[in-house]
Image (tube, rainbow, N blue to C red; front, side):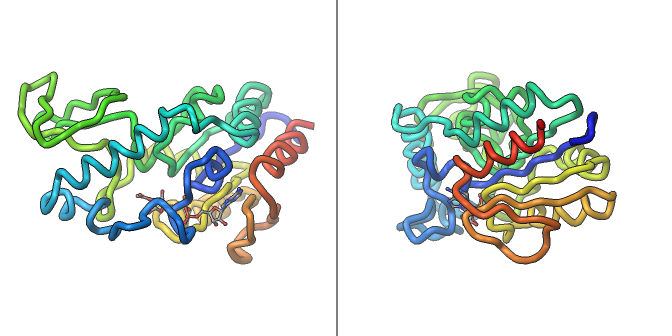
Length: 233
Ligand code: OAD
């Protein structure tokens, strides 16, 4: 591998599947028993905020339950960040904290985080490991019922887009890992990277199309460590 390459990685729910968190579009996926628009849109939150709080409370509780741990793919990406002699920018669509638990230090959570809440009144973002309800009180402005999950819902602008677009345009290597590539803007990241001259690769349980220069098919817990070994060698 050439030294000093800028590597940009995009991860999706496939990287956390073997850690016990269902992907979104599997038949038993994250939206199971719910309409997406009911639990992942500002309109759904206005209609029934209690349902939305309960939905994310349950996911947060599962994440913190001890049943969920980073797997070898998360570990390998943390090792890549530690050992690669160029920049490694890790963008994730996932709202879990498994990259951080594995040791990655600056993860760009473009779709937000389960372990954060935001006040709709004053905009303050808080870390949390506690359930929230429509009666929860904002620690900053004392507003009652103004807290919402710090999750990007459909129709909302993903976080960190300026930094992400800058990193993509400077990338030498772009890797898309465990994502179906159907939700924009993340689905278009490979094009921005390719337009700037990056080599593009995909690592997934199944190839999602012929958009990438190279595809590694297999379970993330096996293929990601292999790819990291190759990249560091
Ligand atoms: P999807 O459920 O759309 O896709 C998961 C991908 O992971 C699929 O292509 C699977 O084949 C692959 N996969 C499953 N298990 C795997 C494994 N063990 N190893 C490797 N790959 C595996 O989930 P995302 O692409 O993450 O957004 O979905 C993108 C966005 O759609 C989510 O962030 C969420 C959702 O709507 C928001 O909530 C804003």
